[in-house]
Image 1 (tube, one colour):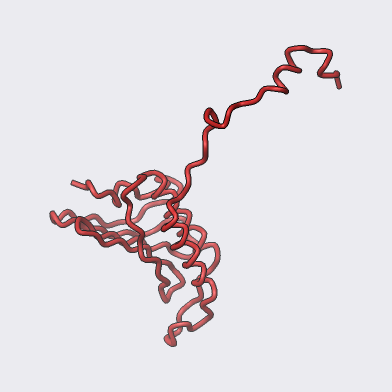
Image 2 (spheres, helix red, strand yellow):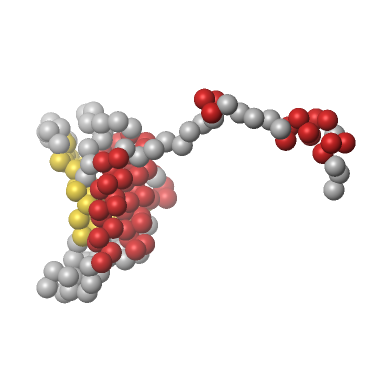
Length: 149
């Protein structure tokens, strides 16, 4: 391989420094969401029959999909997104549930599937219900915004 000192342009490129103010900083999740996600990790400790009615344990892949969906939704919408309740379901799925003065939204992240069900309604009476693919839409951010018509 050539010696960089033999190529003045290459040498300058290798010594290039970018001031911190010019670097793109990765967006950070607000601390209340980080806390909620870390707290929800306890769902992974639920064993078989955790509800004494035959419940299925929460699989780590389901938890990862649910928390990644939440992260992407929050990062896409930005400030003003409330923290949802993150709850286990007896079939091994995870519910993300938001209730505000303007809307209610429930997303059920199913085990071992790339699709989730949702149900939402606004105080104006708009109701939304269906299934979305995590791969196709990335996040249901339009459903969780306070300004839903």
